[in-house]
Image (cartoon, rainbow, N blue to C red; front, side):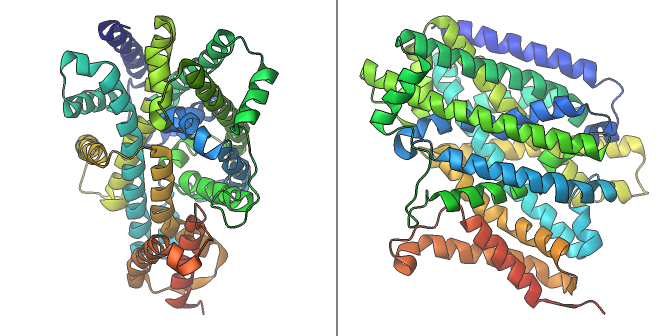
Amino acid sequence: MSPLLLFSFVVAYFMILLGVAWFTGKNSTNDSFFIGNKSSNWMLVAFGMVGTSLSGVTFVSVPGAVAKESFAYFQITLGYLIGYAAIAYVLLPLYYRLNLTSIYHFLDTRLGFTSYKTGAGFFILSRILGATARLYLVVNILQDAILNSFHVPFWLTTLIILAMILLYTYEGGVKTIVWTDTLQTTCMLLGLVICVIYILNNMHMGLGESIRAMGEKGYSKIFFTDPNSKLFFVKQVLAGAFITVTMTGMDQEMMQKNISVKTLKDSQKNVLSMSVVLMVVILIFLFLGGLLYLYASQLNLSATGDKLFPTIALEHMPPFVSVIFIIALISALFPSADGAITALTSTFCIDIIGMQRRTDMNDAQKKKTRQRVHLSFAFIFLLFVMMFKWINDPSMIGLLLKVATFTYGPLLGLFSFAILVKRKVTDRLVPYVCIASPAICFILDRFQKELFGSFELGLEMLIINGCITFIGLFLVSKKIA
């Protein structure tokens, strides 16, 4: 399909986003930027968060991993249900009771100021790495599909996309993102369903027949029972639960949307309903992955992994499906990138420089500072995307989850200790504990064959990381008198 035509659809889609941003961003304030004035509709937040949770990595990498790992990813999704229940009934009541704008302020009230800064710092590191990895994947596909034809360099493509994101989040923040995420999630899910229907029709297969064909190829296996394997279902379910608790419940980007809902009850409904929808959607993505490999075999294509879906959609499907794929892919990109930049801006302004506590700045000065921080994070995103271009990992979903096990572990340890243990930590030692824990986990991961033989450590490294942090905090704490 003509790159120029694809590009025109991208521009048209972006203009719609700008229209939504203009409408929702009118008369915005810092409160609407950070927490949407606590007036967001829970159903919109729940639906939009599906797109944020999935991202372009899920859209491309989850189907691409089916040949290697079958439907094993669904085991992680089952763990998500446990994690979201913990968020709804443990973390959200806590956040609402304390009336938090930044969830890391809880660490200040419970552990101390240095612990608070450490938690916010680890979130910033985690979200920068995760969001830029997701952004890189989608930008790389757009580069190959469209921008290479215009001889636009990769760095400029990334800069243009970041500028587009800034344009519609610059004023409204969370208030705007709640609405744009809803639009983008709708487009992404429509693209997913249309691609599934097209491939089934083109292969002249029904639902049952396609599942049997996947089974014969070994694509549809869900549960893995070898305890030594990193895909062992107990490991995967536990990892899914803890990944959800940390990457959603202890993540400012995800939780600032939840706490923008007016009441705790509505926020809980948002989380629980979103978890069920997310599970169904991921199952459809896995089913699409099986279909793509069956279709690739029929076409004698050698593409695998992250290249599978883009290759088939852009080179072996009709133009209207190619357009749908590109729009759906962009729709998967924007919710993860726009929310990340907004959340990082919120965390840096509120938690690192303490903007809300400062009396030497009026509202206009605070807004100007917030906008400068917003621009600075966009520039940081550009640098990290270029770093991922240099790394060029073949499966971004695997890389993302692995990075999360190292960077979110300290957050898991900090929040668990603050909630479960009534002890006072030596606050100044907390950063050392939180740095030592992922360092130990990195050594365990690097030398796991020498240390554990055939037993493989996978995503459960997040739990180990959190436990090491927890033990370290216990060692530098004392009973409250």
